[in-house]
Length: 107
Image 1 (cartoon, rainbow, N blue to C red):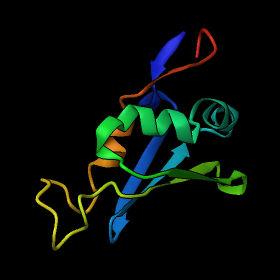
Image 2: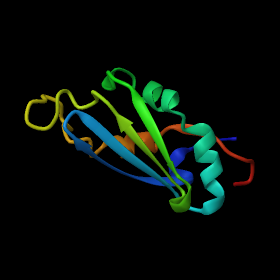
Image 3: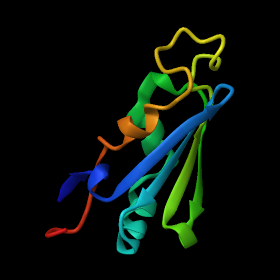
């Protein structure tokens, strides 16, 4: 069945220059393998479309039940030069939570 990512995880996001950072943390340990399977760098980049002009990198943190994504060239140049509403990347995590992923029935 398809569910929004928010059913399985929460996020924190921010920035460093023109790179947005999104931490995705599983609500429960049993959800972590689903996150690893469903949240590929390609899928995250596709979810954000033209907002991310560069590569997306993924780092796995199994001891924390978390994934960390770096979205390069995603902030229109960064905080002081960008004309974007969210030049610091604070809303990217919330936007990722709307992504629908495959999860076991009866979750």
